[in-house]
Image 1 (cartoon, rainbow, N blue to C red):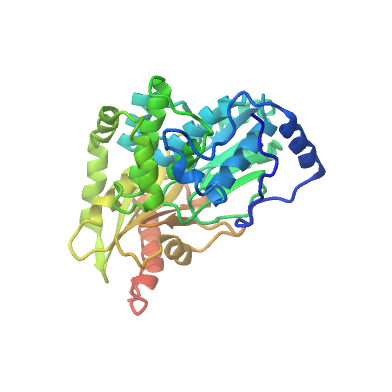
Image 2: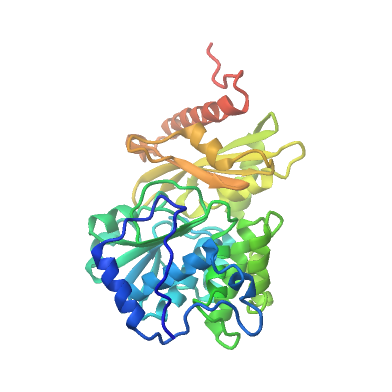
Length: 428
C-alpha cells in the first residue's frame, strides 16, 4: 500500500514550521515509495482501531499520519530522544514507544537524560523492563560525537527541563519532533509537533499512535509486552492511578490491557521507598506550614540522587486533612559538579487550581524569558538555579544561613498567592 498523499496540516499549534520547497520533494517521493508496513488503517477487522478510524478526520489520526510522513522523510537516520533531566514513567515509556516505531523506518534512536533516576518506581521500571535509557551528563556530552546524529526528538518535555538542549542546539542538530501533554513552554521550530495540554498523559498520545497503526503490538514479542507495561505505568502515574483520567485515557488503557504484563507492573509499583526518602518525608512533616489549605514545606539540602524524594513528600503532604495543595522544595546538591539548584514539587486536589499558572505566577521567568517551572493537572514543579551561591557549604553556619535565605524567599513568593495579606518575612 502507499501512503495517502493528502496529509492534512495542523492548524492547532504555534510550534509548527512553514513548508519549504524541500518538503514538497519529500512528499512526492513518499507517495511513490511502497511501504514495507501497512499505512494507517481506518479500522481493523477486530475492531481495535474503530474508535480512531471512525474519527479519521480528527486531530489524533491526522497527527499519526503526520508523524508517519516525518519518519519516512528521515528513514535510515540516527536520532537522539531527549527527556527531561529527571524523567518520569510517562516520559520513559513514550520514548521507548517512539524508538520502537522509528525502528520500522530504519531510524536508530538513543534515549538520553541529563539528570538521574532516583524515584524507586522509575529505577524499578528501567531495571525490570530493560528500558534502553542512558544518562548523559552535561559534562560527558562534550566528549560525544554529535555529528553522527541527524536530529533530536523531545518527548514529554519541550526542552525547558533538559540540560542537553543547549549542547545539541550548539552542535547544529535539527529538532525533528516534539510530543508532549504540557502547556506550551517556549517557541521551538520542529518538523513535527503534537502538543496537547488537555490530554492527561503523553502515554495516551503514543497509545493512540499505536492504535492508529504506527506499530502493531504483538503479545508474543517480549519488548512489545514490556513497552506496553511501561506505557500503562506512565498513563497510571500521570492520571493519579486513573482517578483523573478522561475518556481518551481510559480508551488507551483498555487498548494496552490486551498487551501489558500485570505481574510486571505490580512488581514495579511495589518498589520500596529508601530510608533517605522516608527521612525527607519526615522533614517535610516537621517543617510544614499550613495556610488556607496549602501545606508548604522546605526540606533543606538533598543529595542529587535523592531529588525524587521531593515529589514523594508532596504526594504525602497533600493527603493531610484540610489540605488541598502541597508544595515541597529543597536545595539539591550535585557533589560531582559543585552545582546547586532549588527544586520543588506541587501536588493539588483542588480542581480550580491550575498548577502551571500558579507556579509561573509565583516564580516568574529568567532573563531569557524561560519560566522556572510549570505543570499539568494536579501536579507541577520548579527548578531555580542558585548561580554564584552554588556550592561551598563546608562551613555549617554559612550553609544554614544560605538555606534560611532561600527558604524565606520561596515561602514569600508562595504565600503572596496563598494569602496576599500576610508577609512571611517579619521585620523586627
